Image 1 (cartoon, rainbow, N blue to C red):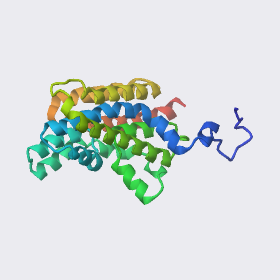
Image 2: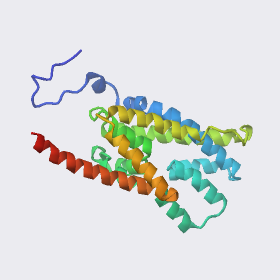
Image 3: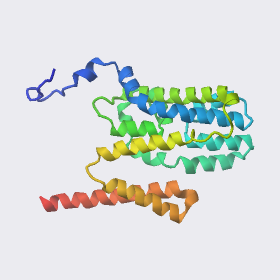
Image 4: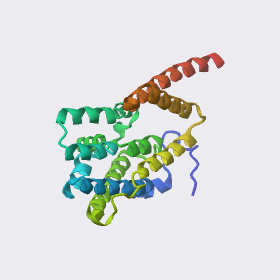
Length: 247
């Protein structure tokens, strides 16, 4: 059934599918494709925890308290080698520096409640951010966002526990599990590019990444993200000036 929005000039029309579908179910449907990619990656983390000589329950600790994707893989080796805490903190800052830029556009205002907001900030992963900023605003309400983050977190924890439990049967020289994260980001990037009206932004992103790689490979991520945001700001003002001129 399609409702003509013309007669309703002051009231927003809600998609009947969104109106009648519980928010937890919408979040489950939205997070399932991403969660399928997180489970193999969590398994790889659980296997790594055991292979580094740590107790399997550390997989639960890492995924529950750190929950930082690639940083967790690095942290496992640091904990196993008793790396000094200041060095771990510096590494965490460099690896997750991109989250500073995520905060500029993450719609935290949709989330209601202090506890929900705190968890939403804690669980702001790359996948959760991509889902929140590219999804339909009418369907991606605050509760759907938080539920989606809870589901993604559960996929990650479940995969790590499964990997740590099954580590004794998984060969140490198996390859390919760590590629799950790369494959997942490729899919998310394709969807983001399809949502764009042109290829300017993806081209800028690739150029910033390649330039940062040449400038300083060890600190590629913060350099690339900083350059990317700067160029987006410049592009915004140039576009803003061009519109009145064309009009």
